[in-house]
Image 1 (cartoon, rainbow, N blue to C red):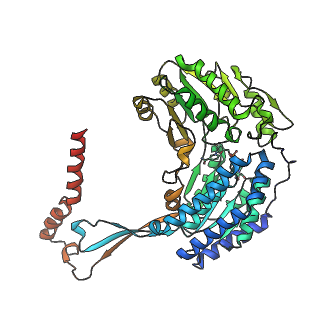
Image 2: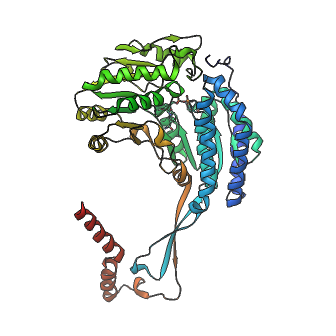
Length: 491
Ligand code: NAD
């Protein structure tokens, strides 16, 4: 039977007058130096890990209450993701924190050079509702790992989850790690404060609000946004595997995933077979009546439900199409006969509705993708490498998964972020650590030699020597050039 949704509750709200105290508390904690040592970072992450596990049941219940998120999905995409990220971060922290030695050209000898990662200060993390725990805690973990204090702001649209994560952070009892709860008013107030970095996840309209507020303090921002992520299916694709991976990526969390395949461009001769395969997969996953499946989530609120319901009237409903306002259920739906002018192609769908568009060639698919904004994710399905090459070279996107969906963001060694309208900057793993660090350039000079060459008076002899010295090729550059041409010759 499907997961019952809890009755909607009003979000918990931090009184506006308390927000200054919370931000100041974080700033004082950072200024005290407590967040800088490796010991504090590891200990805080370990305790956070323990608390996330201790609160697992409460978090899973909250996610089910907010939008019927199945426990399996909730564990894999929230709890498991967070625990895995903390483990990876702790294991790699020594390496990430170690000063990075870089070469010093001959002209600047004797001396040595390195890059040191130092914390930025107080970070702010603003999260959306669709993966409300993970999208808040993962950036906070990166900020803590980099030695910052951090103030998080969960989404008010998943109020049970916001309360659950608030309980975790309260129990952490760490002055450098705090949450502000609430919606537009509270976030607006929060953004009047000076932060040293803001990571915002959500839609592009609010991203502009965040960036304008950040500009007041010259605060750098990472913007993790969305958009229409296409899947391109070649005539050479294994349609059974393709349909399984498409249906999984699209209908997980009822399509409320920023990197869900938004629509499919399929070569015309395999269009009908792909639709039939999708029908079989949806039945395998969710049974004859997905509304009764415990493995299919619900839409987060009435306004998103009504927005999605309108999209069910575009083109031809090939699969699904049912909806139920009382339980905010939209069936896993596949639409065919869709054109670019249909409403469903107007903006990111962010729900379980998958339009399929037939194209005559991969070139047509690539042009189709390129007439829109650069997507957050792009999926290419084919058994022929040349097809993937055509799609990758012809397009740009935040990330790509070849012959799969979603999985590319699970690898902590890959940056997660958008490009253009789908966002700026990235995090996950080392990229998260670097996002919340300043890469400080350190050049250390020996005092044993101090040639007067660079100092006034600037004689013509010195000038000639400097001109020669500064234009001498660095042996490393000569070596790199030689290696490059060798590789190019080998093809
Ligand atoms: P949302 O409505 O929960 O908003 C996100 C955050 O912005 C919330 O914390 C909210 O309180 C705050 N906010 C809303 N209006 C504001 C305002 N006027 N001023 C200041 N703050 C404000 O979530 P959403 O924006 O509906 O999220 C869905 C979008 O996020 C989709 O486009 C999706 O693709 C994208 N997304 C991206 C990622 C990613 O990692 N790139 C992940 C999840 C979602």
